[in-house]
Amino acid sequence: MSLESRLPTQRAGKFKNKDGILNHRLSLSLGLLENAAEFLRFGLQFCNHSEVNLLLPYPEIHGLRFGNKATLQESEWYTGILMRSSDWAGFTLGPGHTKSFEYRVRPDAC
Image 1 (cartoon, rainbow, N blue to C red):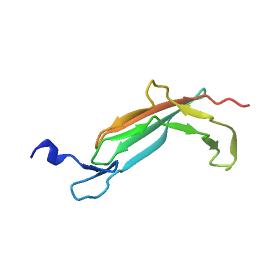
Image 2 (cartoon, helix red, strand yellow):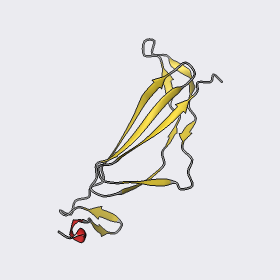
Image 3 (cartoon, rainbow, N blue to C red):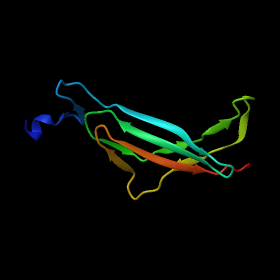
Image 4 (tube, one colour):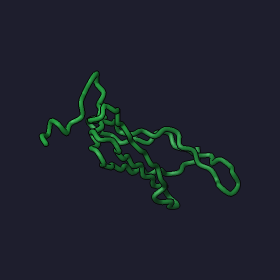
């Protein structure tokens, strides 16, 4: 099988698999990795379930809010924006590949 016969067909900027079906499946997972007295560490993972490379922007997370599960009271602090700086605003994620980002947040009562 040649490389060309395995590549998806491109029409009008959209990729289709060999059966002509669009396949852009991406999952995101945000989890608490560490809960220390002086900071919280979060992990954000992208997973490409598509059959093609995906060009994605670097993630920005806005306004995470926190609360107490026992009392159901919302915390007085929250995040503004969590982001990663880069010379380029995106990255490529290949089929079946994952990419993880970590963020450290320091609680600060305003």
